[in-house]
Image (cartoon, rainbow, N blue to C red):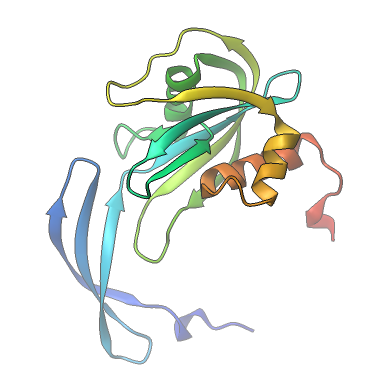
Length: 190
């Protein structure tokens, strides 16, 4: 039996150190389970949504962009940050899908809410599967430069498994979409 009290930290105080356009950073003092105190640096993020758009032929749409922070060109599922902490991830997912790909989905199914880096960041991403797609115009943000591709979902999953697609939300979203659309076995019944 697990006793969560043996591992739970208790926040004592928090001080804002940086307030930015996309994130805020604070120092949090916590009481450790053994009574000592420790510092935690916390990145506060509004959250985001990401979409795995799969068409009727089994193709997924991915965007390629340069991630300057890591100096990497990456293929990713369409995604974007919430406009506010109160925005529903579904509304963000619908908006980002249309902006980045020009696609509108008849069906948007929640796959999961994921926590990206729980050691220091509050960011949560709502992952959605989009089906019943129709093509419209894209509307990139002013500072967004993307390339769009369409590839078989099976190829995208293979590229996740061989380590070529390294973005975590993309990898998990593609694998979850594959399992949802091709349920070989029900893992929960094992």
